[in-house]
Length: 308
Image (tube, rainbow, N blue to C red; front, side, top):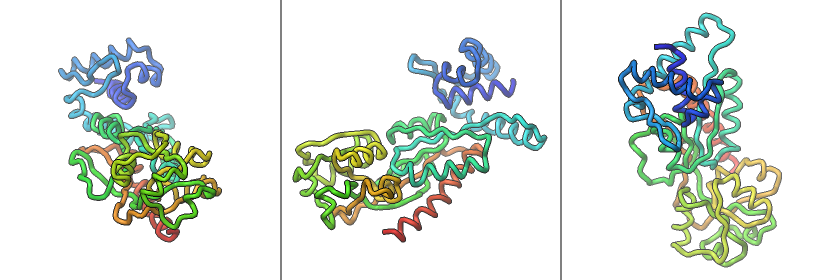
């Protein structure tokens, strides 16, 4: 068994494709595939499930993944202790529903980069269900998801609350809805302007459906993620409902392109949750990034409270 075989398995798991892993590792795909096959034969386990859509960890492979991570982390520590200048570059993959990308994720990654100059951080935008699936399969190290307070927490993940807030209406400052002290469901249905809704599969889509009691505005758009929603608002296409922590401190809000108003619903709280797969061993870099998110959320939470 060779260290590079374990590194190859980790790359295929992270990227979900033998082709993409081969490109990143500067190998031919047949050479990479044969190396992985040799390791599988040596272990007597099919580590990967190979399908037309890509390759992902098998159930047996997921059980062995923590041990593979342990070995690779130990190798990195050994190389670091030996003063090697060309250590293997590791990668941490973070899935996000984009609800707090600007005020939380970007500063956290920037700070993490200072203390981990050889670790790459790959940010993957996806819906919550996809983030959970990829976390379970080992393709993501961390996941940022929205959570309505009171919903059940999935038992297969460790969940850390980062931020808590209220749903608000994100609008342009010159919107008729911006003149209201609070916005009701009837206001959203009154055709003042189109509603920009998150697509089905996002927590805020489910919340808006509940807030409007199943009623549908006369005209609405749908989009993926808060960042695109805020851009559409800034361009005057309509208004959207987001957690307040997704709007406060956003560059578009700081420059006056968007603002927000509270909804008449004073009971619902939205949480930003950081999730990771339950495992006996967590890569050191992933653990450090997890801690960096918690620290930054503590700072940001205080700023949101003082600014509210």
